[in-house]
Length: 556
Image (tube, rainbow, N blue to C red; front, side, top):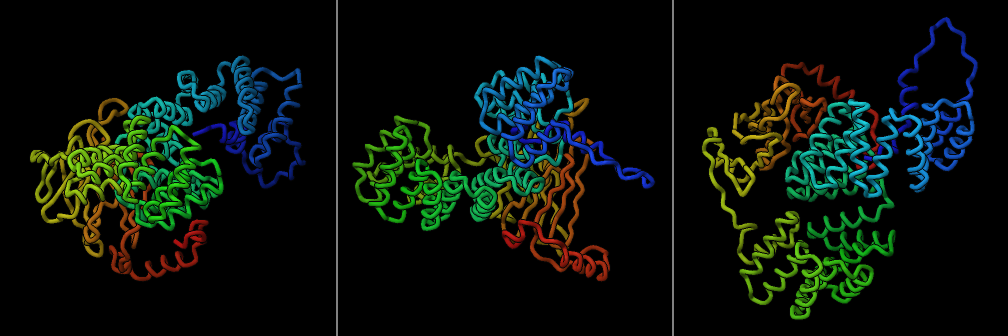
């Protein structure tokens, strides 16, 4: 999150304090906006350069008290950041803090700028100071979480993002930040839940759609991932990176033609996009347009000679073109550049497969999948070799079982399985310390009999005064054989409220956010004890409900 994109604090406070005048009062005379208010309005309209002029003129008033001058300097720093004038912005924040050392907003904004400049330690100090001055400052918790993610401390980041969400449940940036933290620790369902909340809070939050697509790719929901990326593109059409990501999603889904179009669009937007040339080179190789593939990958290497990806992809194209010996040289280069590159390990596995080295190929392909679980090419190669995606066996944990459902430990991860539902494998993603003891399995009553709820212990988390037990609930589409979502159901004395309403399930969660899930169509007239007149009225309201921008764009 970059808080300098937010409204100036004076503007937020002014809006909160506005009240309607008494009915008997005459209309007040029009007021002339102060220079600070005028600058804030210009920032909202996107005219940062004019805002800097207004703030600079206001600062010439020698009679300004220090706290007022600090506020204007902070706002000018925000405007300078938007103009890319980082040095001027830093000077403004420094001066504001010198004049008003008790001003938490200036510390928060300076921390964001230092984070963008890569000065993580100094950024952390600023967020710490902001939180000492304002313990309920949600944005500072969220921003400190961003620093902790950069420092490779996802658990600390989760705690800070969670605190920010408690203070500001409907704010998209901390929800998206926590989603990234969950994704980094291997909890894609929790990540999807938070990204979904983020886009519900801000329907135009393109990065949250992009991040949710990554989480969905991790659990094999490719169609949904492509839809998310299409939404992100709709709101950020000039972002070449989004086309690259969607290009890979198409390619992994077996649609090389659409992938080539997206990579071409990325190159059109950014002719120096080495990742665009890499992706299109691979897609052309998959489509057996080898000359085009070589041309693209040669261009990618010229743009970024130290990219292991381009060399790995060219090695694969050589293998597809019956030239694995030449490809092996590119693989060696890719591995030297990055021994842990999933693309390089996959390409080496492909070359080893071509050379009849099945055992070493399997090892490399499995390692590639550990690093990038969504890399379908490695999965396909392992299937050709008759090998599983890893060499880890399920270890039963009967102490955590209930009737019909069993818990197995696969490596470090727990899953629930059932002989009655052999196609369903439920990841038991926890939120606290402990083991995921299964608690109850309930198949819903008609008309929702196609859904089941598996509740399990989510572990202990820190409460306000003492540790609190948590409980999670996996929503299972029995007929579809898949996990719809995993929801926090209880923490301490707080319990989520579930409402099955027609073709939607709404869950008022324990952390103050309401989640909604689309269900299979049902006959709403027989749901619960409501009469048909109620349902007819509800249908009429839906019929004339104003359409959102998403419905206009995507027809849903």
